[in-house]
Image (cartoon, rainbow, N blue to C red; front, side, top):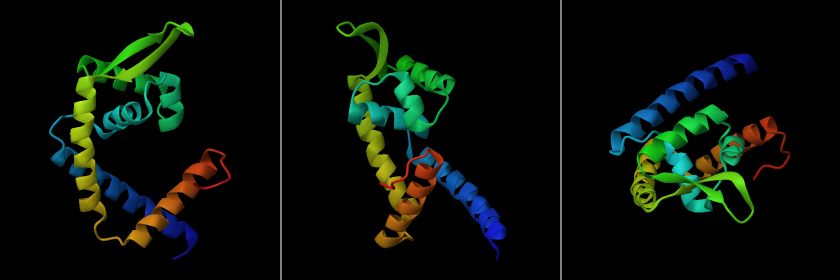
Length: 148
């Protein structure tokens, strides 16, 4: 196959694999949260309060998308909006709640179970290579030279 044919083949397989991932996530996940909602929860759990604009940059989701996800997580009591009264009261932060921490912990286990299910056919070396390839694609698109 030539380069174009390989890229078309990859694109089809990527789309199928993504759908498989979403199906696996939804099958295992009993909370009803989408994977993007989980990722926002994960970021707030692991890194602490963040402004919406930081999440927009990190996840490459529109500000409207972040607002919709945040509103849903707030309505479920999993995160809350707070203000930094000491630095700038105009700055609004999203912060995970205690209930959000409990849900994150449950979903983090589910995520690793889904990983095991979806990637069990790959060796550790293949997973490392896949990570390297995606790192290069993402970093090149974002204008970052070094691959992490």
